Image (cartoon, rainbow, N blue to C red; front, side, top):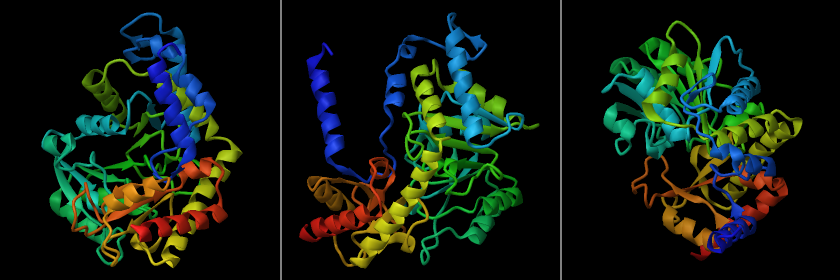
Length: 391
């Protein structure tokens, strides 16, 4: 690289990534093939519009790239192309969610989403997000005793509020979600059911987490977490008389975006093919095995694990309210100094703010990619415990 300053920074970041234990559940390490696609000449092409209907010429090859990605997306999640549509143009997860709302929810309409402190995402209608400024959030939270979803309470709330859309699928909820019960809730309330499976997409693909597709109307996902692809997103929409697929396509362009990032779309196509392999299924199983062991080992050492454990790739640890008196922010900083990367995170009933909450969020996708297994989880738990007790 001729630009030595940038080259130096890239090398420094590469060294950092290789030298730490990365427990951030929304991060992963992509393959060399994905990186090659991202750094390819596809970056040079402008391709506003959709395959066969572009605003620029010269998209013969680009159309094939995008169609291949869409085909693989449907195949990976075992979806019938006659029943489901995939849009692979969203630049990331937040724009994908925004596109769904703008397509399907009237301005000022109601989005029923989980509170941040219970594990929801900003784009699920939170007040500080644009999704909470354009639409009204009908907030729900986990049961304070079990720290899990109370489906009966959710049903009563959805019916009473007459919400337009219900968002299931979260950023910091460690347990399985019962998609069937959410379908029943949406039907009872006359609402659209949207699932944001950004965190568990790779687990669903690997067959170790329940699939939302038999029950959802719309499914959004990022591609860079458990799916182990580039930073991008996909929107899946059912094809029926409601024309959600066509409405969402129009919301992406001309509604919200211009030219898609075809180099990223190619990278997504690569990761989707990788996720179809037998080795990926083993990888997905190991992610959950590692998370369960890590949660259990920390619990043995006296740390309170939110909801008592995990069914997925992530876990939440109470560092403040369990008599430890250590804020999530301080815990994050102390662990980073010790070579362990986590993120501070709110926990259910958190009395502290999101910038300095009462807990930390840990995940196992990245370290599982690096080949770590159960025995390594005990060592990591021991190191976490030792560092935090010194704080």
